[in-house]
Amino acid sequence: MSEYETKSGLIRPSRRRLLTGGAALGIAAPFVLRNGRAQAQSKNLVFVTWGGTYRSSVEEGLIKPFMAETGINVTVIDTPDLAKVKAQVTTGNVEWDVFDAPGAMGTGGSREGYWEPLPASLFDASDLSIPATKDLVPFYTFAGGIAYDPKRHPEGKYPRNFAEYFDAKAFPGRRTFRNRPSETLEAALLADGVPPSKLYPLDVDRAFKALDRIKPSVAKWVDSTPQTITLLQTNEVDFSYSYASRVKTTGATGAGMAFSFAQTLNGLEYLAVLKNAPNKENALKFVSYALQPARQAATMELLGNTPVSKKALPMLSAETRKWLPNMESDQNLVMDEMWWSTNYEKLSRRFKEWVLS
Image 1 (cartoon, rainbow, N blue to C red):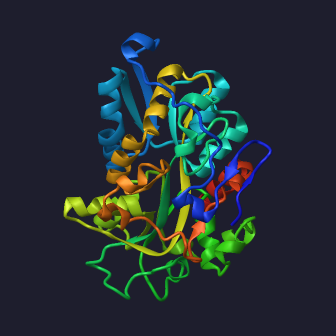
Image 2 (image 1 turned 135 degrees about the horizontal axis):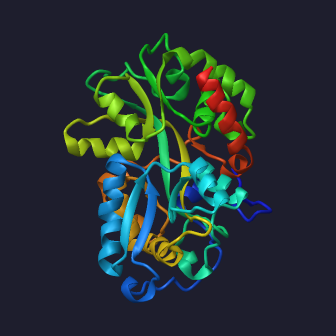
């Protein structure tokens, strides 16, 4: 896949760039973190992120050190929701500051004008493996795929790729999908035989037809990411669309789940600052802090995702590196956030109607 820049300034990364980096936008002096007690208009910040072990990892690796260094109080809200961002921004009643956005939400929000511009001085552009845009900065890359309980489903008894995940006869059992079109439509087309290299633009009608076939086996359309794991652990589903980083953290609890790296959906997670955020200066400090190599390494060591800081990548332990996807595999997909930036909102409406039908 090639890399290109759209008219809006959004940049689509190549497969190799997701892990190895490449030429950046140029070198900018990093945003300097000063003591929040003296500089900020308030001592508060609202950060919207994901729950469960993800939240605890981000708190330990990023939020607690940030609060200790700056004196800024961070309130954490679970589960990013672009519809709520739209409601806040369009009514002028903005309550959130920093938004932890999967690629499609980030680029979709950028297209709609929901984010504040990010100063070039916010980060060291030469250290980012994926360039920032005018209002989004990459936080990490993630790998989505098939999770299962190895005690209930030993080798050969679980689906390894999306074609098998959609084959309820060969692999009977209850499944989950995300309750959103992004990732779900891609999985459907991969299951239906479309090669990753030819997936975009998505054949939406074909994707929904594939989903029609698997819909009776879907026990839960998941909004909250922790449920992709807890539903497995409580035996409410047999297989789950989840994330390598989520599965990695289950090993520490003694209830370890497993993850198939045979085929993964790989995307960017962004950080964005809401338009007219009530604590804008604190939000910019937080975003800058999140991109520092040491913070990237500490946070991704806990999360198990791939840092965007090139200096942070070699700081990761060998154990964490085992949980990173093989981006050289032609079975793995790099999601096209640029395509989603123009299609996310309308397909979200169609998807929600289809789920309820």
